[in-house]
Image (cartoon, one colour):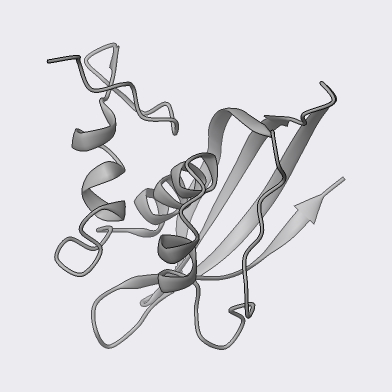
Length: 136
């Protein structure tokens, strides 16, 4: 049986990359049973969902007030890495996570997304992505 690949979000424990199943996979593949415990883990799992083109998870974790009707993916794009720069509570049920995500388009052009995302925890105990401020 092949080893579980490293999680796209790049999270590490004791110096080694975490496998998808022990990292974001447990939230993405079992969203109804295992919600992300905090805003940073939700942001990491959403990055992984983009890398794996899991629109179902992205919609399920997007706050209803800002959720788009559909989520599209750029054909042939590859997500190359994620760096979490900061994360903090902004209130008793809200948090912000600043990150940089790198992507390469099918044409080979590199893109960098630097965003400070806002998250809220609803009465159901789950965290949801609300929106983000993109830095140029």
